[in-house]
Length: 61
Image 1 (cartoon, rainbow, N blue to C red):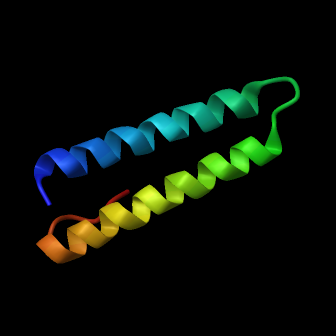
Image 2: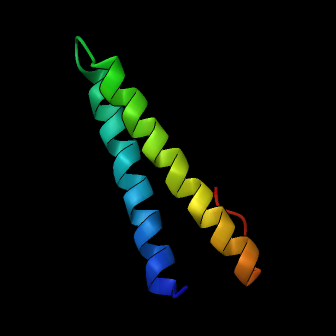
C-alpha cells in the first residue's frame, strides 16, 4: 500500500475520533451512534496496524 493510503486511514481515524468527541459532548448523546463510530475507528486502526506490520513501519497510536 502507498503512503497516501496510510495517510488517508490516519485522517479518517482522526475524523472519527473528532466525531465521537462531538457526539459525546452533546446533552443527550446517541450511544448507538457512538458505538458504531468506535467500531469503525477500531477497524481503521486494525487496518493501519496490519499495513505497518506488512511494510515494517512504526506502530500506530
